[in-house]
Length: 415
Image 1 (spheres, one colour):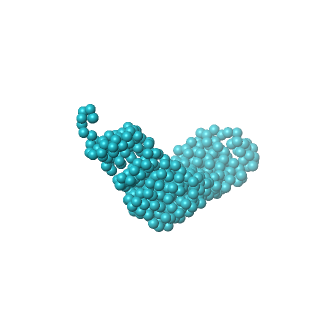
Image 2: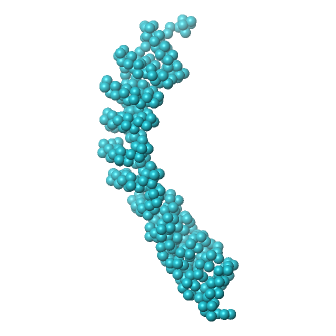
Image 3: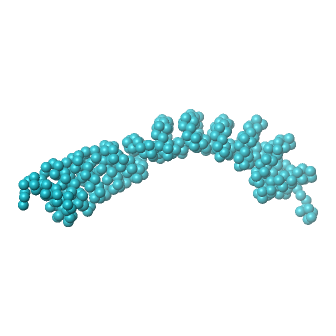
């Protein structure tokens, strides 16, 4: 440009400074700035040019030059909120949290208006460096100067995530209480940050405390109920998980994913907690949620283990209307549990359902019924079951014949 004898003015040179920043030439940008100051006249830099130099230093990683440049602008009387915001953003990007916080405070002391974005950038930078105390201090400053700023909720989320990583539950609770009292009002995502951690850690105590706070302020949603259910499951408290699902279905009409319900019901079956399993199953039906074979199987097992053969029969009878067909494993489990709990009468009833269903009967199922008949000394029924087995095309095994011989001996049917 000099060779072409084109006059170098401030506008042209400011663009040169700006472009050098994009090319990672922060120091070269300052060289141009110094030349402009020495040239004076039409080339004398203004506030916009100095701000471009601050941005150039930030873009090129020359953050060490920024504090001196800001000080120089102060001496020239060209400082503005834009200068500070550019400087803070550059220092945050460089991980210089202490310097960025110091600039923010200096900005406030000089009476400049700090935009919420500058606070959020600094808070995020503190969080990235693990400076939780710095994040919270900036959050307090931000709330005092911008109580209604849209970015305030995001700033709270950053501080909450930091507290979750440290498992500082009292601090998390205090942050949520402060939001409920002074704003911004927490949303589902706010509570989810803490409850998700409770679920992963199986921390039921803190989950219950958070649910109590959220319920008080009417913040509970289906998604948050789901987080609490996961926390109960992870801690092995499946009965409480079932109660939480029931509560949610009654208040919000929500049910967790089918697999979650199946998992809870399976453990209830193991614990013979048939009532909780049945209540959960009824809630599924009331909310119109999907009914899976695994779910029905789990409830059948729970009722059989809980010595509720009548409930087992009711469930088997209702399967067709629900669009599911129990498999042989469901019938076998019900027979084995009912054989010990309800005796031969209920086993024969279940066998009737098995033979009417599409399920393919097995020798294990018939053997189980025959054993129940032997225990109840129902000798003629033992032989009837053996005949039914043959009619169904199920080959009797050695145990079936042994039980039949026992029945024949007891009835003195020597032939």
